[in-house]
Image (cartoon, rainbow, N blue to C red; front, side, top):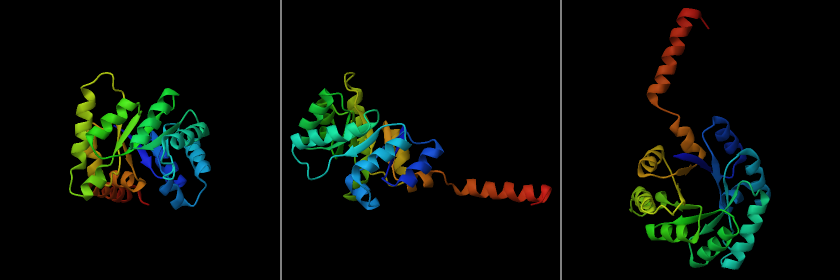
Length: 219
């Protein structure tokens, strides 16, 4: 399973990229607005940092297929080698996915909450589908089971090449569960990446090694 970082914070993206653990970025208008930056300029800045897929989402005001197609083309044109157009799971969104895929523009169908939605997006031509497991957990539905179901379903059909991005990941346990469930990618906040590096026994071991070194060699 590969890792994308889910943020529009350029410093977090640089830190994660420097670790060598991420291969892409997902973001959305809300995350970019939180940073108080220009939308297009932020996407271009992200693409300059990470050499991998960068999901830029169409705005919520672009509800019809024609609008999403036009905006999708503009997003992709910011950096054709890296930009992926994030499209919401709606009937109009499926039309936009089909049209953009026909032009060779990769799409990421977002706000997936059922296996049927994932299958529709894959058949429309989405390069990625993003099931939101954390939001399902919030309403007492097992989000990881959805990832597992989609992975099993896609495996039945050799003509499906859509990749699964486990989204709304909120903890290191989510990451482990998604890897076991068969997700191709987990997109995670920077704080979860930081949490994954930690373990109390690792910290204790480092402190012991440091103390022993000081005893033998001094400060």
